[in-house]
Length: 69
Image (cartoon, rainbow, N blue to C red; front, side):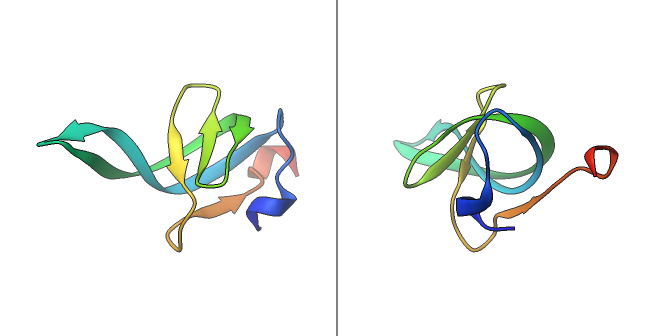
């Protein structure tokens, strides 16, 4: 699934890199896998209702959770 297909306010399963604070003045990037409702989409990030900011890059994988199909 592509970022352009996402509808804000719906729940998706996201796997990818997130910005998780800063370390030595540089963004600290970690890899996460969650199922959350999407609150906002920017040019560079997908922001979940829990506050996680997934980076839109080649590591991002988006799908509809099995229980919502």
